[in-house]
Image 1: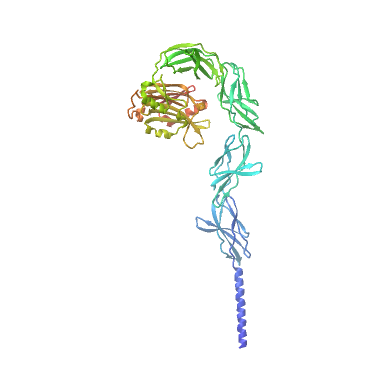
Image 2: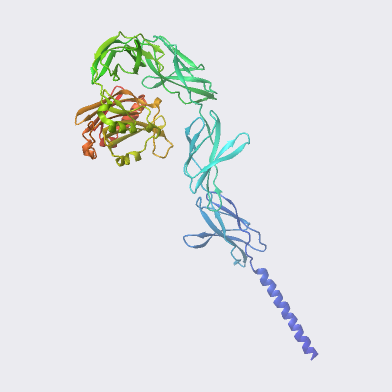
Length: 601
């Protein structure tokens, strides 16, 4: 019995040893799950993964999730603890898994898949970086769209810290960097990024080096003017090496490079005029950095005195004409004041004619004219011989219109021209502080204003400009016409215009007709808002709806003369008038010399 017991115990111990060894062998042959899989680096078309090393295995297999097949697909294997998945799309999010395997007798045994790891490729490298505008204190940069990007970060090189620093981000492919220093070299790079798996950057662009420009010359003037010479003077530009002077003669041509702040032109004929502009320059190695151009200035030698002054009475005003003898900046008109026994300057004009429409009393009036050079009329010729004419007044009293008409005129800011029998706005009415947008015209009928209008939009001197014409009924008492000149900065998204300032005003005149009958004239002068309005009939309201319909307003005609500031404005306005849209709205025009004659009916 004892012998049997020993045999059973021995067999049990042998079986225990066999089972234990089998378990150990089985445990040794099982492949473990890969741990700590992370993204170690990314590029535009690849993602690199890494993980914790396992012992006793043959290698690792890497899988990427396919959104088309909706499952993980095998992409490659490695014996290392890192693997780069390539041939990916830029700026796209991906999911990956890794599992280990062991090969024995040409048969693989696989471990469990790792936890999912997310990674996103970087956007493509930014290309095509360039400057599209350079100013004295700002620069506009642009570049090509980078595939996979949701935004871009701009880096400027800090020469003191000797590395690039971020100056801003944008979702667009351009940006304006402000608060720069004039005539300064900058180096910039741009990197695309997205936020699909944290903020992921692509490679920075190649560096772009640019230099901000010198400031423009702020003032330019004329001095020492004679019949045969004049001197141009301009303000200094800090940091400039010198200045370049340009004269217009069928195009701008450089006539002088100098380190001086003046230029004297000699041996000219009387009444000779040229247009100039000047800019500063700074030499940087073999290249030049230029400043902005000064404003244009017309330089005249003093002409011979005008002659042949003649006078006539036209439409209740005295019309003066004379013969010019050479180019002048303008002409100064004086009238003798019989009450004060002295000559008084009554106006200036750039032309050889002038209308004195301020006379009220009947009597003899004497005039004389002289030419001048320079906007301040500092240099003048002798006067013409005095000419005298008898004028019989047709002065219209305000009283004939009654209190109602004069009250509305006052509210609207109208002034009475007694010679023309029309009302007009002053040069600086309350409307000037408001500016203009199309909404004003849309709501005009709410205050019994029924008008037709045409807007002529053009670009000039880095601003958006608009020349607008109106005609129609203005409230219960008046009908008439307007011409307005407006502008706004290019970066103003709101379509609201400012009324131009006095320096931007231009020469205009206007004649107004109803059913072919001339109603009034507005003389050629500098205006930002040339207006004229006549009461429908003294003491009688405009019958309801007289000019309410567009068809009825066709009885009104405006003939205007527009004299642009310079050739650039002239060309811009003509181009706008030639557009099909403007032609369809009833504007006809023709050009004579420096003037544009516009008819609106």
